[in-house]
Image (cartoon, rainbow, N blue to C red):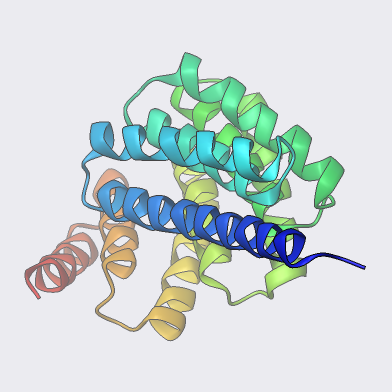
Length: 224
């Protein structure tokens, strides 16, 4: 039978764990706000702290660790720090596949992030199967109309545009745009992102009027 002192100690430990978990969630939320604001250096610092908290509190293979690795890899990619981003995404993918399973959304995120790193480096043959697998995984797990699916469609479209596969790129952009309009609303910033990307494609292939309409729509969204 536990003594009063043992019960109090156990309660304190449980409260400590809960506090740590809140701390990781707060750090993670703060880092994502900074990332979406384009404050990458500050976002990286906060995400590094979140990763340390997750590893110490929950263990090196916990889903919070996978999430922080993915986030930090994405931030480094956005900064052009590909050599730093790649091992983080690979580690997130390895842990995620073992502990979460190959069809988990965090695994899809790892695949997409790694594919985006390779695409930015011109390693297109390595990038394409990773982004395609991320897309297929998300469609099966989250459904075909989830915002994450739209994100991966957009990323694959960017790759096809680079490779001059314009028809395929256009189709993917349009599908991503339709998903985000329905899931997030027609004035969401991610809708503007895809409008801008599709406009760039239309300018590239000589569809100036269509490009201008999308550019104007993106500007209206950004001004809200």
